[in-house]
Length: 436
Image 1: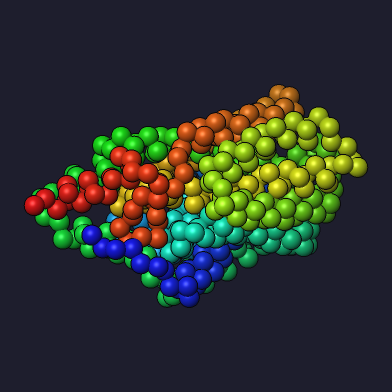
Image 2: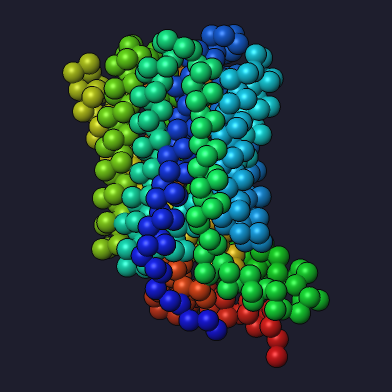
């Protein structure tokens, strides 16, 4: 077995910096639809349910892309998948600006969202370079890239939308294709993935057909199967909350709380700046204490605070309520990358993380439509109470996921805690692929 070696500081810093920019672009793309939704609805003559369906179609595309990308990242390489995914959704964003009907927009958005779905693998890529003792903090900081993307695109939208319209915002979103080239040139595949690929190539070909199938490896091992199912359930509810809010929060502030667009942009920037801080604090506490504890408390805290916003907001306190919620919103996202990546062995990590996360994303595709429907029948306030409930359920399922099962920076993952069947999964797989 190849021994784990300490990652070179210079290398992981480069990987981190480029990964951060990739998640910034990811966050900007996801938020862009919510910011332009009111104008797209008006131009295309959409109902709330139809507008929600566009958001749901995006999530379905992200789920399909993430599941396929997770498998491809194990088979072909983390870097290769991230590069192609980044190029796909950047160019796709530009094409959205050329659409003129609901059907055209939906088709292009679905195709480009296949690439967005693969961005969860950025955390996996960085996790495989970062030292164990800093991993939760570094991945917490990495996740602030998504919040930074929200802030950047909200700032751009506040300037571009009133003067140039929603199409120009999507044209600008093609620029990050340059980042895909930079990642291709400067980021090699992680040592752990290269070692795993070498092991596969050395295995007898006859045994590599079905026993090397990543989903066979996941579901034939009791603990790996349990982790996959728990993460899929936790992701269903967490992502229903996150995407439901991102899709409809701007409309809620503008239409139901009667906040002017300029002021609404300021509120949302403040919310995501505080979420930025929440992610860093979550990562730091996750290293000192527990990834699981931070994630669970963050989900439950966000769940309990949404009713406060719905029932107790006033013109005077809405700013402070949004800021405090932003901190709670950022906490589970700040520790999710490290927590999830450490739940699976290297050989199955891309497939397991991409699969479980995007099964959740696929199921959460119903959230924007459900929120739009409930808002039509009742109000957005009632819809957001439902969002609070799904955050709570995500925390409950995550409570049953152990901390730190694998060291993701090791070339052959080893257990971080007491020996368990899950910790021995790599050894079992090695024996299957390399019988003596």
